Image (cartoon, rainbow, N blue to C red; front, top):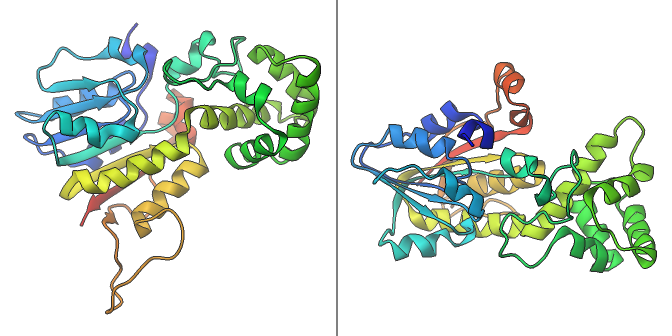
Length: 301
């Protein structure tokens, strides 16, 4: 399996340029996946070093044979701790391509895709205990309402949550095809695919605690980056992008920007770009996944 089959890296050139790579610097790719971004970073290194993180065991198959690269199989919410084990306290740049890889989507057994039938799994790491099936079959109605509404931005989240609880009392949800068939009657006509994607996204975020992991990771970036170090983050839905944007602009996830006695903003990062970078039409035509991507670049004060 080639990297291209595994996952086509999104906005590769803007990501690499955003890192402003020092050939002798230390860099971190928090979402190694197919290794597309990592391999491009390595092309720009001389005596520098790159640490690649991924919690998915499948990603290890793509690790380059390069002494300047170290692969760490771990969730990026723990990256500071693992870097410390390698004697690394500060780095020159951090890259994270959030969301899900093409490989994970295209593997039916993982249960991520609405296109295939598979188990209701959706775990990005097989070490996790919670699955999408457990969420659907055991969560209380109120919890399901919250997940569908907040994580999936589903408009009829309350109705859907009630229906899930009623249906599972008669028959548990078993496969993605079974669940999709159930969802049909709640999807707006003509917008079924978008609706399925929203509900599947909500389940995936819950199973993998994606928002909690993202918050923990972002807080650590400030501690690990050197002054002037670059943070390059690509997100694929509004929930992620809002967290990243708020953290870069305010140094926190919600609330107002804090200022010192003289009215100067108190925040650890400065945005390098005025607004999020998006893919051009040519890239979107080549790689549909780039359609929803938003790239934000910041440097540490």
